[in-house]
Length: 97
Image (tube, rainbow, N blue to C red; front, side):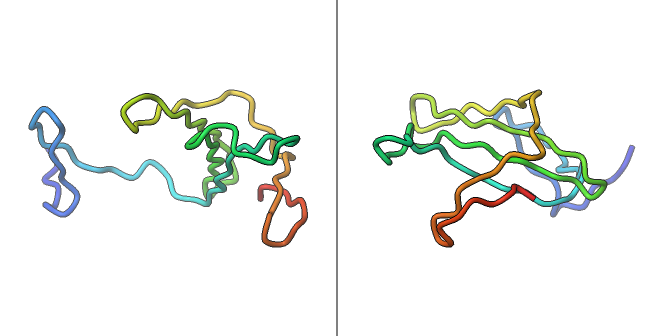
């Protein structure tokens, strides 16, 4: 059994000790959705996070707001590496990575 340093051990909601263990490290892009006709946010908290690990593999996490101020997160199978996002500061489209 591995002895984990206290700095990486946390307590679950059920009071059980759990170690935070790195799976991989990389970069990410987070974006939201705005109605293209009204220019208003589609749903507050509805976002996508695209992750790219150090070997270049992409993973897409979709975040959907649910009741009680919480969010439901699930992995999407369709990962479009060529997808673009709008950068409102630069006022132009950009590739994710």
